[in-house]
Length: 198
Image (tube, rainbow, N blue to C red):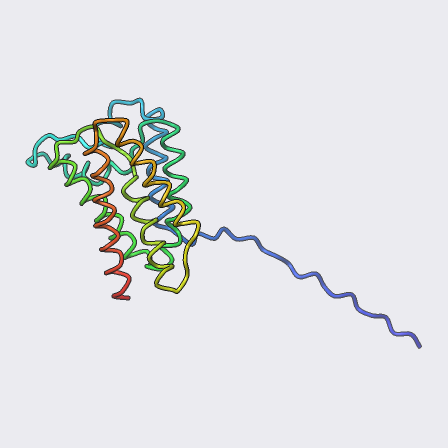
């Protein structure tokens, strides 16, 4: 009497969209939407609302621009290069800090950088360099705290500093480059404080 072996039933596999960094994705989508709606930054409202323009502290729009300038980009190449770095680094920091503290960190870094820019008289400046540098700094520090030496993040940080140093020699607009670095350092210190209070 022969017994038939039952074939194992194939298990159904479902593919899910995994949004492990909702704040990172939201910030990027806001920047992308503004960039596309403005015709890749050509519309007048894009410069008015997504760049650091000094008017008066009695002007409510100036307080909006103190934060919204990080969503702006000077062109397609600038948009792609800066936001690729953001999307690569930001999810790691958001996962370690949590969405709430990560949102506070991004807003505080943008606000401090924008305030420093207004005080120094820089106008027309836009970009997320302060956020990217702050996130790279935090990634390096978090790895060092865990007993690891982050080779890739360290190289990215070194290349960024090299790029800024080269730019210092090629232009007289040193202040506009020091502002995002100062904002990033202050943001990184705040990030360490928030991370320790977990």
